[in-house]
Amino acid sequence: MIFKISLKVVILDLRKVFPMADYWFICGAPSTIQTRTIAEAVRMRLKEKGILPSHLEGEESGEWILIDFGDVIVHIFRQEEREFYQLEKMWRTASLVYSEQENIDRLDQVG
Image 1 (cartoon, rainbow, N blue to C red):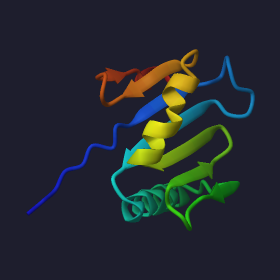
Image 2: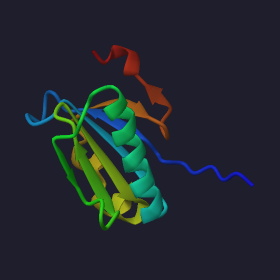
Image 3: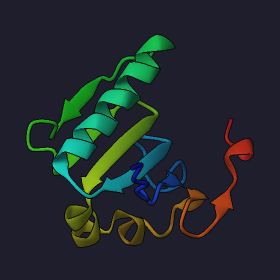
Image 4: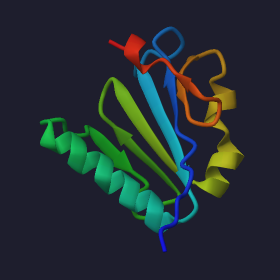
């Protein structure tokens, strides 16, 4: 049996509101095992392209994993933490580039 989980992926364009990164990739997963697996997959995929993170934190607990790739910061939450912190609402002045839930996809405009 194959289970499909919704990660509720969101990508925010923070270039006009946050000087430390251009984009935030945010997603959630039901368990810490899944957040760690997602983090590992992201790191491996970008490593294949020669891109290594400058900073990584939270992987041990798996509740909120942050991977800093410089211009892009990846936030991978266990679902309860994502609902608690609500980064999308906290940074609502940022432009929404991609939202799985809201069916928004402006990735072709990123560049």
